[in-house]
Image (cartoon, rainbow, N blue to C red; front, side, top):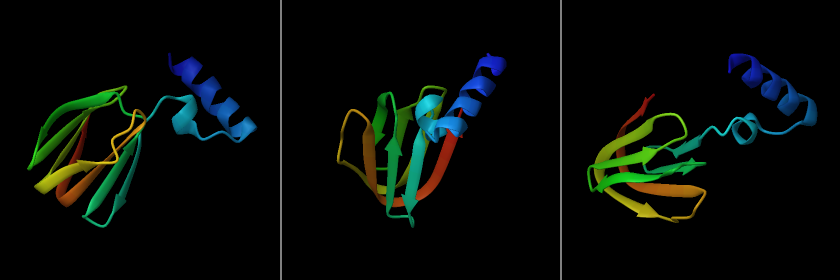
Length: 91
């Protein structure tokens, strides 16, 4: 598996393709502590105003905070808004 991953990383670099697309990895972008955009996810596991759990290709993403809401829900991306206090990536 590691050997294949290395070849895919090399191919992505050669073709100038983002590695997150080739390796099926999530892209996580934060705007301060007010917004968190998760791209390339596998779905929502749990949602409350203080916790959002998102399934990733490998593991889960835990977003803890206050007044968390979900916006811009699409098949490829989720926007979490509110006061983000902690982000944990659990493999």
